[in-house]
Amino acid sequence: MLVTGGSRGIGAATARLAARQGYDVVLSYVSDESSARAVVANVEATGRRALSVRADSADPVQIERLFAVIDQHFGRIDVLVNNAGILAQQSRLEDLGFERMQRIFAVNAIGPMLCAQQAAKRMSHRHGGRGGSVVNISSGAARLGSPNEYIDYAASKGALETFTTGFAKEVAREGIRVNCVRPGHIYTDMHASGGEPGRVDRVKDSVPMGRGGQAEEVAQAILWLAGPEASFVTGAFLDVTGGR
Image 1 (cartoon, rainbow, N blue to C red):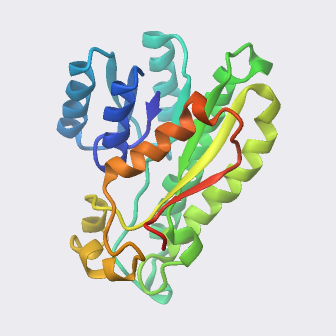
Image 2 (cartoon, one colour; image 1 turned 60 degrees about the vertical axis):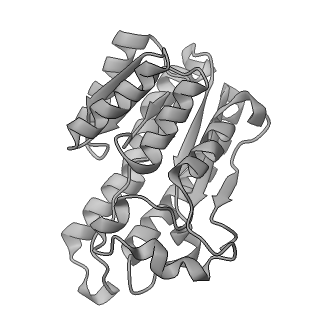
């Protein structure tokens, strides 16, 4: 299993749970090498193999190199979890800079497409592959729009969801299932990137269940969609939002 953005938050929780379920794990990261190494150690402690690779998912050259490393060390890929994503400081639309918009779409929408492209070349029956599973990580923001906060982030996740639908149909007869998880308000470090580390506690009363979620709860949904229990599920969207 490849987990992009696997050094923290939902990605790290997914890597740890995947190892407990018997997967060898490759995780990509952009800058936090120490956290990536810690997750690798967690995976290896379960007896599974693990590897961390520095790769910016918005850079096609780095993505090609990432998959080449997977070929070299593992020989195949069974599951791709497109988890890497970014957001920026809370802002209204009229204050957003063009470079910010470009970067957010490059990482959150184009990056998963680049990774899925490489995965399909290895998984698809058309290319002699064994089949596989792709799980894209969107956000409840794609449905709600994140007005006054992260409207560009929400739009990029909306693009990811449209890609999920199209790609699922494109490869459905080639042994590849493509699904999507929409996390809601989850306790992760990402909120600090938006300038409000305590955001989940501020908004948790808007969640019907009355609390924020944990990264491990999202990981459970990802692993279900990735695995054989979801063998007749493709093009699906699973909300992990506490009912919001």
